[in-house]
Length: 142
Image (tube, rainbow, N blue to C red; front, top):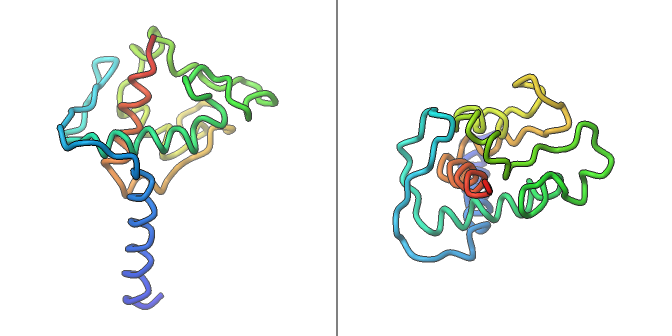
């Protein structure tokens, strides 16, 4: 791939990811949580970033995890084991943000969990989107 093509491809990918946050709000910053006493990123998130993280959850993760994160999405019916209930407060306290980051970007098999959990490696290059997604998952705890 020529340098010009590479730059164009990077621009297009960035534009697509940014368009996911079309339902953006103000610019009030937020710091992501770090359940389980784990590490938290120093990435500062705006309301637009948070909206984008929610949009990623609603377009990718909900298929198996459901909109509320209970593991009851439309794609979960044939899965064994069933998807994790991301809203389980006790489970949330046992995992840190680094673990969630690894599961999301590398998939379940990479962390000793179900290979049915697909990797989302494209999120490695968009730290604000990834952190906003993790924060959204943290917000599902009940």
